[in-house]
Length: 441
Ligand SMILES: NC(=O)c1ccc[n+]([C@@H]2O[C@H](COP(=O)([O-])OP(=O)(O)OC[C@H]3O[C@@H](n4cnc5c(N)ncnc54)[C@H](O)[C@@H]3O)[C@@H](O)[C@H]2O)c1
Image 1 (cartoon, rainbow, N blue to C red):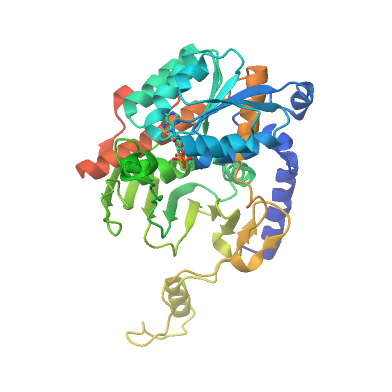
Image 2 (cartoon, protein in one colour):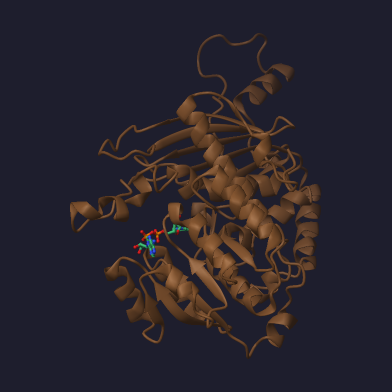
């Protein structure tokens, strides 16, 4: 891109961001996320003195993280904690001793002193707990993914159509400032037409937790067994597939893939390696990969446009024009400019098309770790605190989120269809019986 043009893009981009009204801080962000209609800092002021009475079901690792966040939310008060595993309940109670404790979530739901429940239990418990909580007249915030089976997802979606209660799923990227802003940039045409997506999540860890007694293996290592987990897809990919749908404003119609246990052959059932291709009706594809025995590539959510690439996880984008030129392009230019009289057939006279260093542009302004090419703004926050704060506010106002359930439904369905495609080793189409009006292929 010519220098002059680039300057124009940068200036208009800065203006564009200004127009979006971004100021650091949840209140300002909440007024501009697409999932909330009348959620303004004024509204937050209005309800300042009120507190949503929140109960937490599932006080393990994620549940305790939510307790820390809830303690920072001025318009929330933790009133009850529930877990059927005593050590976790004890740890959680120590974080907030004023809360009442329960071991049976159904008993907790009988209480009239609870406005909303936060569910952070293993995936197989999501559907029964969400449905029972809605039936008990509570507002519900449930961890991702939506549920373990497609039928359960549909049952939750159907229940949501007839309730006046608020229902959130913790797909926190939807409330992560760099994602919200990055996707708005994509929608504004910054990277041109979206022509593909590449998402991956690499780790080098067995995903196991120490178990005090063998009888507790399935309870504590629930992620490793199909009866309680849908593996890497619902634990990791769901966040990333949602981002692709949000960016493309579509849902893929079909998926193919392969899943295996490549390395951690320790009695687990779920794959430790998945590779999938999701296909949108406009022929754009998501290339998805997750492997937990090599972490070289880390985690990335890349949306590819014909003019640039948005790397949302890093908070960075690149223009195609900022590269130094591919090997083939260079060769063709050299031939065009008569640098060579004929095509060279031996020797390294042109560079291979290995990945070039592109100039990073940052989604958020501020201090950046330029060397890493990663934006450090918002890196310490991932939206989990903001989505929880929005839910607590909704417990007071009764205002439902816009398409939060629908986005979680679509993403979870794609995860489950991906698992089906890998198990049956065939291409799977999105089944008619699970389509909902929100889904546009
Ligand atoms: N949004 C995210 O980024 C994110 C991150 C981590 C975990 N999660 C989700 O949070 C949920 C919990 O994950 P975790 O890592 O905290 O698991 P965990 O095993 O640490 O905690 C789950 C807790 O639920 C309790 N529990 C299980 N069955 C119960 C029941 N019937 N009644 C009451 N309590 C019960 C367990 O005893 C445990 O304390 C999962 O759905 C997971 O996918 C989401």
